[in-house]
Length: 244
Image (tube, rainbow, N blue to C red; front, side, top):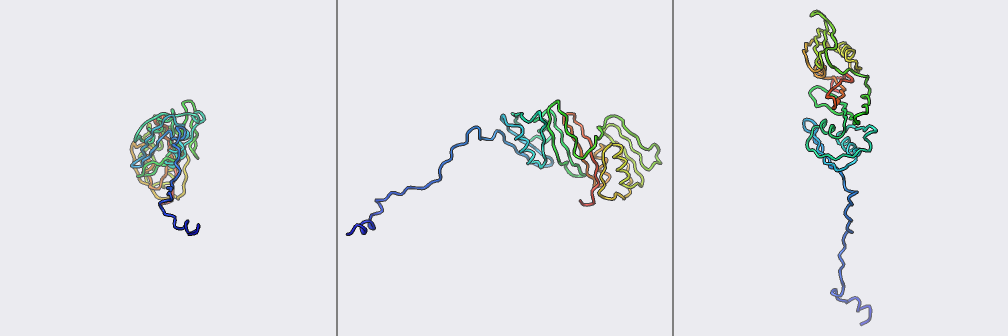
């Protein structure tokens, strides 16, 4: 038997199988582990669950903004802040109030739909919120503010009492009524549609938002919610094309 033949008939028992396996990864260090867990649920509104242990506020709001589809800006005084909070299933506005001394939400509001947050701003107690995008100053409604029209025969009569609006309109174009509302509330009005339909309405002491939205299903309102003061201010009125 030559040497080559001896190698070929070497019994299998003389060989040793070495199993192959993936290299094990080292466990994440404490510095690599996430410092917060966030969950956002949409069901007739927005509910937020957050567990944070000395997490950077900028990281928390960046994640929250992505989940909401709305950018969240931090004022300079909050950029280096850290948060330690624990809450479950809080409404969005309550969750924001737990993260910063001052919180402002810019909503788009439509009839028969939940308000949609478009932008959110968080500030410290002594910092001012930025102006709402594309708005003028707006008017914070408080007390008896304005009357337009004084007799039952006037085609348009309007009265503001606190945050309540009374409006009576007889056979007047929607566009005309919206312009009067814009002047009264000191907010811009955008007309992407003609607004020629004639209105006949009689609204009494409704919240301003609710009263305006009753005028047409094609209306869109921009509303600034100040969570610290508990106020809501219309900052823009827009009439979209039907079905837009």
